[in-house]
Length: 241
Length: 358
Image (cartoon, rainbow over all chains, first blue to last red; front, side, top):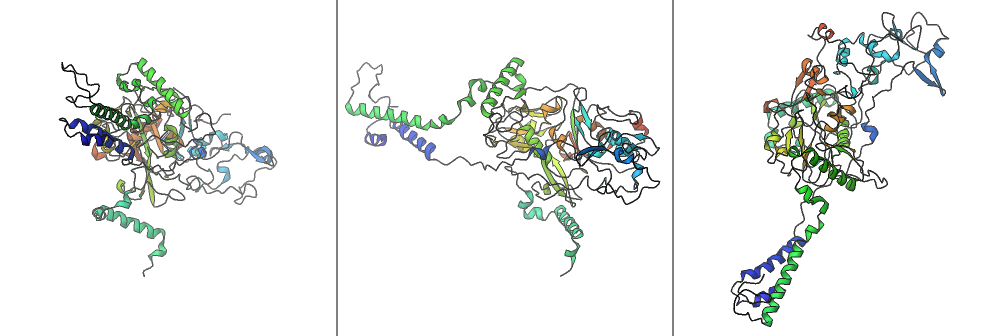
């Protein structure tokens, strides 16, 4: 609108002043109808249940004295076992406790660890009876190096304060991760991973491999390694065409 | 607005000759002035949308973290507390935690143990109030084929029904808290620096968001807030609808703003009060170890002394405080007597070490 006015005022000596109005108008246009700001892609928020990031140990352990729930009643081992005197030899096939699968290497006798006389307790191989709370001492009899690592926090996990002068810390016991009957396999069994990231500027480098990188001898060696591993994993694919 | 030698309305200059006010001149000047003011107002109108609370004089004049006196820090903390209460409807336990004397933090990670479950990633996000949308995560878990350490080929997008995969191994990477940090050197405003306990921190109120540090970091450990951190709001909850962690510290996990960098800080709000970082506590396989490097009985110091330890990208000379290690093959070359001298290790309450009685 003021443009028209300016157009007719050709006789004015200082025309530059009249440009300020149009300049502002252009600015207004720029602010109101100019290009949008760069859009930030808002990825969907991934919420993880609190249970997935709980700090609880992987296994619940038996405390001293161990109790189990039978028909809704809390029972101790000796409630039944005091009725049956122990046999000379442990039978290899159990009629009770069928869920227990003993796969502990050469340690394949129940009474290597369980006290014959008092089933509420464990036994060291010298015959010394120890409570369930001291299971670490029992494991240490064979797994010495792991026990040493555990003592200094290098094996296993410690919860709580690193500075024990400021608060408590708790060193998880062997059986809080390992199943004592099948120590190796189920303890570190695969678990479902939490979702992958969808963060900004964190693309998958493997997807954008250039020809130059493709020709890298190290990459080539890696690809060959992966192929060999795959073939080992799925030997049927190895059949020549 | 109007030209100086143009005898328009209102232009009562000090000239001795009274200017002649013509109808045309008056209209022209008035129209020009009104149009100009209107245009100026419209041009500045986007400023209306700016939250005035975000740009207070107090905030503008706030000093650098290192220059603040305790009283000034108190005021700043009170201001941030008020902001958090207004924005996120929770009263945070916000404070400024100072480093502990005689403590150098170190972190060790057992690569032989890690199963790549990403629990550490999400425990960190929950503890440190990272933006959920867009996602910001401090820890990346790389999945790499067995038999090599080729970080460039590491994939952190792996999505398997179960982990670990038998042909791959997993390598979590986060801030290595370098003793010679390149990110600190490049910062043009000294908004990031290394603390006496070895943790590199950021004053979010001082950061200008130039992202030099992000480019300088060889471990890709720094994250940028491209936008205001977003949290899913649970409107049903009257208190803390965003589910933030109220345990906050000035240099660590207080809510960030748009345009600032952030990174792992070894959970300062926990570690400087003697606790372990969140990523460690959540690890289901006990692969993560944390402690005071200066204490020879600490977990990390022991690991450095006894395990096969390496650091990532050693050749760039950053001297990380984050170590990767493998369990040694047994039997070891360390005689048992070496352990006997240090008794039973640091005693922990609630853990039976000697048995037999009771």
